[in-house]
Image 1 (tube, rainbow, N blue to C red):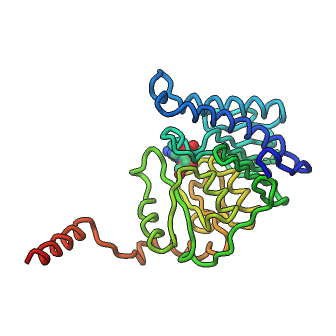
Image 2 (cartoon, helix red, strand yellow):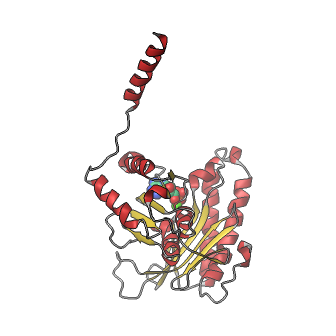
Image 3 (cartoon, rainbow, N blue to C red):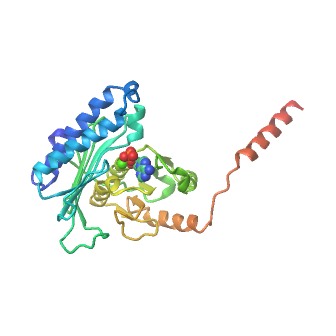
Length: 302
Ligand code: 2AM
Ligand code: CA
């Protein structure tokens, strides 16, 4: 089934949001096809034009389809924030990939329902999710209580029960990387899992947990537009999302741990250990490695 033939006509928000994401994704694909040579030539770089154009398109389409709904976008849109419904919009998640011609990025639309008495810094309920990868024509969708789908077919998290057999993913911010401890977690999880990927789009990483391509994803300091849609996809696909201490995930909690549910406790245990400085796996420093290498070379010569 193609992405465009999303069959969930009985769903409330997904069909319209899917059409919007497909249109925005098609625009991103056109910008991407123009190539990276043009990227830094003008006053405004291609990436900025692409993500601003996509956000404007999404903002305009949402305003027509759901005139009461708020929109909270990565490129600065803040409209109707007092409304009961709010779309978190990432028009181009995976910006660094896009800028380098690396074909892995997406459009992410997540809908939150915030009943009138919701305290401003508390989450409402995520009720709809659409993530569209325009390079693979993959459309991930979910509505609360209705399951998650990929191109219209139901998806489920994987059934792998242990970290040692798991393929997991993480990401690093494009700025302020020196403030993040994540490279230590990256090291430990690389040693303890089947592999760690850092593909550069948090929204797609979450979608991949939802459809069982990855057993888990964690990242520090994501924003609500990166996570809103992916969180609902993972939950509706049978997975679990918390912060690194196992508390319920909040859009502003700055800690995202999403798993197939089966390896969640094991990962939480590792987070506890790593934050406490326990059980680090020893590996040689580059200097120690160089010394051993020099010793080996000297032995061969003697
Ligand atoms: P972006 O591509 O829309 O910028 C990388 O693993 C993920 O982190 C991407 O989803 C990316 O979104 C996001 N990201 C990049 N830079 C970031 C930053 N400085 N702070 C928070 N998230 C960031
Ligand atoms: Ca993003």
